[in-house]
Length: 382
Ligand code: 13P
Ligand code: 13P
Ligand code: MG
Ligand code: MG
Image (cartoon, rainbow, N blue to C red; front, side):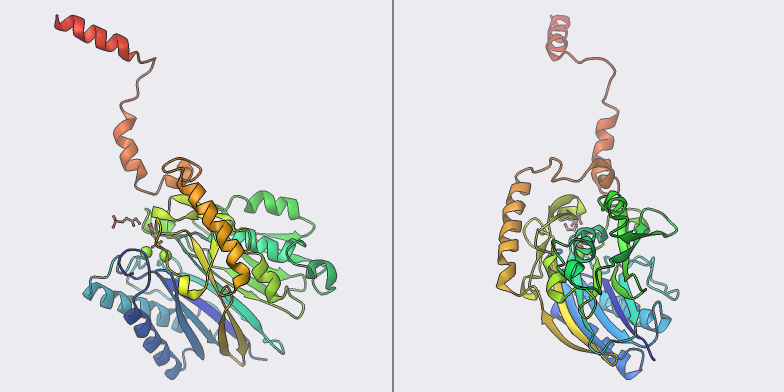
């Protein structure tokens, strides 16, 4: 039985009037490149969209993960798209392209990727989540809720196919050489939470059903680890399969209703609520945010994509968005103060150390008495 691979490969190669939206002509160009990919039989099918300023290539094929031809098709699309963006002087053209020589795979070159390979079921509903102005750990909380929280996923309690739970693969994304750990839920739930609460370090990479069926995957590429400095956030994507022995689509989407706090937003340096939004609202403006996520649902059918349906385009998420907007307003009032501004260690790769450097050598040991200093100065002037 031939297995289908879904490859979602994304990059910010330039955006309109700031970090807001991918220009239409870049989207059109990407569609043209994807069509050529179909004609050359590199991929079977595709859907091109954008999460704010990130260009998203959703591709299907029978070539498996990390396939050189598929990755090169995406990489060439980003490289040539960057050239067009530069010609038009689009803002931050080529932002996520950190190397211009392709070496078999987009990993470590700037773009983010999530890929999943499976034997198609009788019916194969999937959702692709695409976020802007945040980082891979933003999916930790919803992924946990989908696969381990019975207050989100009713099927964990009432469906015998889900009742045994799921296996989470966690990645330590601060390690140069990728390091992974597996944890079984519900048995190891508290240990799992002890790790994944640290969203900047321990990230859910994959989720499997106990019988080995792959059900969820997240892109974990870290831009600043590759670039050595801040150039933009990692703006992660995730692929989740739903139904027939897995959490239902409604249970998967329910996980995004808090709306929880994530890192990113302005200059990648602020915490804010992750808003689930329709495609029409997939653009970050206020303080370059707040962070947001779109969800496109597809049926995968004999290696092709049927759809999409814009899953967060539903009034039922208005209450989540309203709560998120109130949280946004509250967080913004903190201005440059933590916890709105991120913790010092998260600021290490931003431009803040350049500012702090100037202050560092002005610290002296012992107390400072300004009144005495002024008095001494005026006395010596007399
Ligand atoms: P992106 O990561 O979406 O490019 O945003 C960068 C940024 O600094 C926004 O303030
Ligand atoms: P500029 O230096 O272009 O203003 O960029 C700021 C920014 O958006 C950081 O990501
Ligand atoms: Mg950008
Ligand atoms: Mg972005």
